[in-house]
Image (tube, rainbow, N blue to C red; front, side):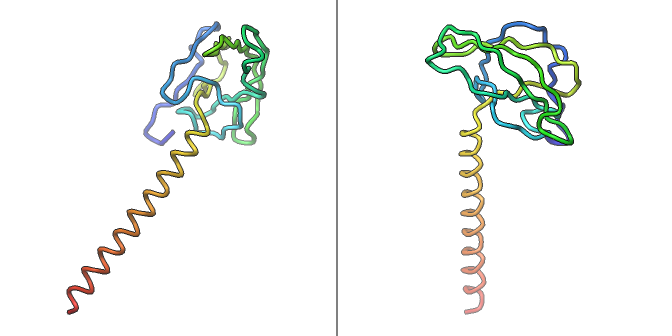
Length: 141
């Protein structure tokens, strides 16, 4: 979330079952997320694991935490998660807090992308240094 972005918020979300289909990932994030992530000011992330193959066709109760200024879990909410085989569905409650939203995605992919972007930035910088060095040494001859 940047200064010019409009924060996603789930305060208008109707309580009910949802199947997520997102380019960032279809499962709720289950590691703590700091403020200003996931396109919102106060993201919600799930405590506990995503139901796996052993819990197929089973609904489990989970807690989600809302990140805030003082902690990544300033308030907890109840949700339900159901493993439907190739996807999960989520029973999400309408939130009582503005500029707050459930965080869905794959953290591993985000971390991989950040590493790739960082390496590319370093390579571009090194290439620019080499080009400048060649240009400077060429003008001194």
